[in-house]
Amino acid sequence: MQDEYNKKHWEHQQANEKGFSLARLDIFKNTSKKSIKNSRLLKHFPKILALCIIAFPLIFMLFNLNKLDRRIEELEQELEQIESLYRIDSTEYHDLKNTPSLIEHIAREDYYMKSEGEEIYIIKKVK
Image 1 (cartoon, rainbow, N blue to C red):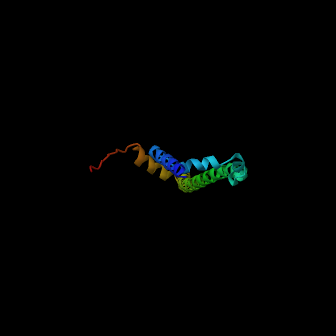
Image 2 (spheres, rainbow, N blue to C red; image 1 turned 45 degrees about the horizontal axis):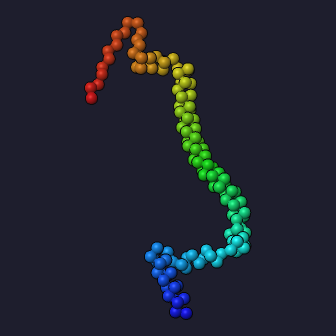
Image 3 (cartoon, rainbow, N blue to C red; image 1 turned 135 degrees about the vertical axis):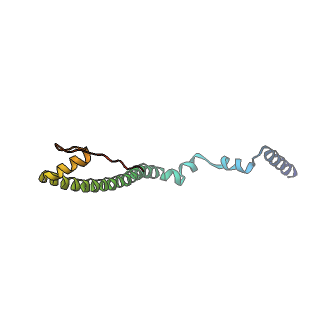
């Protein structure tokens, strides 16, 4: 009895010196193939695997939908800006088409054109 105690005590000391205990090793000794096969994890592994296979594409799809929704909002805002610019340009076009004096006014101011017998003086403002 004393010899068994001394032997276990000596083994325990040797194991502690190596950095691990015999109690950890006993866990692996007691497990058998039968207990591993019957574990809950292995029973539910196909279900867990199927859930992961289904969940990954769904999560990926949700991220893409969110990104596409933001892009749609940006494009709708850009469309509103373009439509407002179109309305402004169409009114200017209509005015230019129907009033020849406006064409003359723009030609004189923007392109420095003149009619016969006129002189143009350009005055630049100094900042």
